[in-house]
Image (cartoon, rainbow, N blue to C red; front, side, top):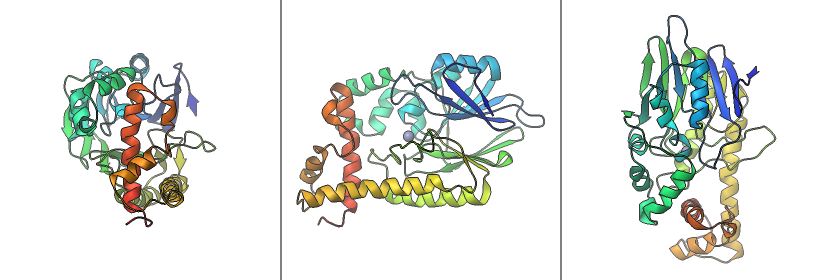
Amino acid sequence: MTTSKIDNLEIRNLTEDTLLVHQKKPPFYFSCSDGIIILPKKRRNDSSIVLDLNVEPHLIDELDDIYGPFTDYICSHGHMDHIAHVHQWESLGAKIHAPFPEHTYLLELHNFYKGFGFIDVMDFSVVKEFAEKNGYRECQKVIPFKPGHTFEFEGLIIETIPLLSHSKAHVSFWIPEERLFHISCLGFDKNKPEKDGFGPWYGFKECSIEQYLIDIAQAELFFLERANFLTSSHSYIIKNPDRTPFIYMRGKIAKNQELVDNAIKSHNLTNKSIDTINYLLNLDLFFPKRKMEGYLLEIYYFWESGIIRKHVERSEYLN
Ligand SMILES: [Zn+2]
């Protein structure tokens, strides 16, 4: 069932008491993520709770008119598309929970700049411009939780399951009573079955391909054994026993490796040095950096070098 009471939002019932909300047209690349609203229910939560729904502030206000009040908001990790608009939930009275240590990124942009290593390669002004474009504003107060923490709101249980390949705080959400598994940003980013996406994202130093393969296997088992539905930050809804997300994510990582390996072979590169990484970076293997400029170019340069470095380290064709 699809209800579209709000312009630019797609609101779908997963179960009677849970909604998947998606902003159809984000104002900028990294400004939005889909999330879950858990509606009030007798002998359970008596007001609505939100999981990782980062959409534009005026849309949050409209959601509040229909489904509010919201007492608690749980963030999945500290990437920009998951933190930019959280301040608006706070201003409506929701308590903000976010995983340690990335909870500090919601409080101060400089923590985001430092924590993800932008500080090593670019000025703060670059990240500031990026944040402003995405509508980022700081929260006043954020309650940290440890990835793996189980929330209990009256009778409602929400387990957070760490999937740390994507970031050092990244969690998925399991709602046992609804048999709903939300894998957040693990890397299933097809918004329609026929559409393609980038797949698992590992542009920061702290991301790990090894850990990705472990997380994907763990999430797959968990989904097949326990859940009815799988949702994520940027995808359509998956019903058990559809294994599409896991096949897709593994396939994307393998394809990225192949892309780097083929470039290594055809350009006769021999070692894992910084020169090799820079050489590959200038081939625009992953992102069309030639078409970019300004702060966006710097940021994509940084991300792509992180991605390439991980594949160079894994390449069988280099010493
Ligand atoms: Zn992310």
